[in-house]
Amino acid sequence: MTQEEELIQLREENQVQREQLAQRDELIAQLLQRVQTLEERLSKNSHNSHLPPSSDRFVCQPRSLRKKSSKKPGGQAGHPGQSLRFAPSPDEVMVQTVNECQYCQANLQQVSARVGERRQVVDIPAPRVVVREYLSEQKQCPQCQHISVAPFPAEVRAPAQYGPMIGAMAVYLAQQHLVPLARV
Image (cartoon, rainbow, N blue to C red; front, side, top):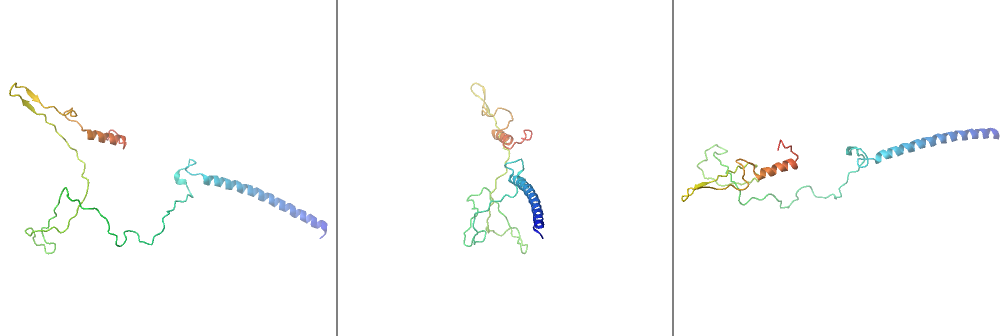
């Protein structure tokens, strides 16, 4: 191979390499544009775009800073425990009676009983409507024969009316819980 042939061959190789470099530069520019588009898409979340919070992806959940313990979960051995205490004076006492033997079904109604175990249930009573009726006395004076009538309290103005607690409950339901007035 002569020098001239070698020079021609090197020029052709150089031309091919330039074309390949131009193609690679074009591909790099396209890939950079695509990376920029994807990074913009990744940087959007529900705080800085119209996207809903459910579309937030790749968000690391906060990890607990607690260290792992060698103890088992729950109450530890030797711990005295703590529970609801008995009320000293219950409002109601319900006696559960035994009328027959659980083993032989013998009648035990005449046998004296002793309290074996006690349990208490603490609960809130169901709210109920309290109807308060006001009666106005009338008395006739023995001196002048005039009939005196006892006045009603100032807040009792109608023959039948709702009390202040029902009014307060209606306002509470309508304003705080947004219950429609027809339902209140």
